[in-house]
Image (tube, rainbow over all chains, first blue to last red; front, top):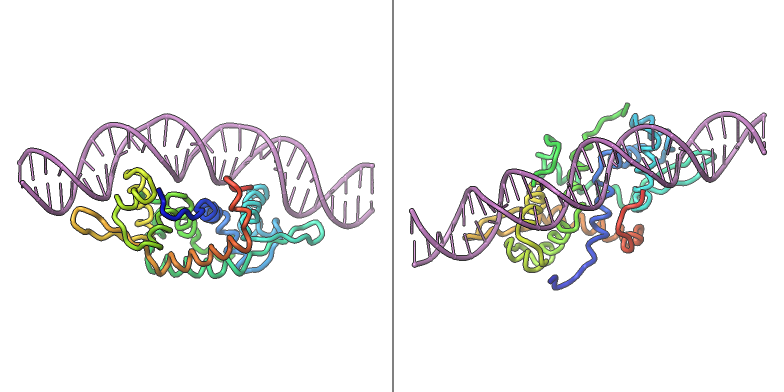
Length: 109
Length: 109
DNA sequence: ATGTCATATGACAAGGCTGTCATATAAATC
DNA sequence: GATTTATATGACAGCCTTGTCATATGACAT
């Protein structure tokens, strides 16, 4: 039995939100170009609206993006305080310790 | 079509390695107690050996842990350079922006 | 209030991941 | 080299996640 029980599930859930190409694409896009409406994201990434909306809901739920009304549109912006340092750590990791991830489709186990 | 195509897949794969309770438990454990053999990890977490080995392979593949022989055992240690800052960012995020994740089982979407 | 534009929601099939079982390999001791 | 101990690998059923389709809601203008 674990000697000190930290609640682990929230961590796994949080990372699950990031473990998806579409959601990572959205985060990268928003982190580079700032707030965007759903349809702008769709156009930029060439993805369907419902597809993007579903994934934005997931990102919103995890506090990674925040929507704000602007007329009929909803502008989504990233949580810079979290996303920017996170991407920085991962950039560094991929470069230095996990370059193999660039040439594979599936996780080994 | 994306105006600037960054390779996104490696990011998603990397986070996928973290999007699992067992693997998060292992990372937390190793980050607190240092290097451990597979059987020690099993005992600490109360998990089956094959289960742990499978997940250690995944973590190793992603460069999050590194094994080293010690007699018949294999000692696994975390990549501190990545894991510690990563957990710090996420700790902070969960506290400030995603406390809802503490009381849910499934990601909303 | 009706129409239109923008976005969200619900449901579901297809595919992917997880944990477990059975089994293999690797190192050390006898 | 046979045995024991420690860990790894392969296969597979069950579950979860994904993207898509059909449809609903919300805001604005007429």
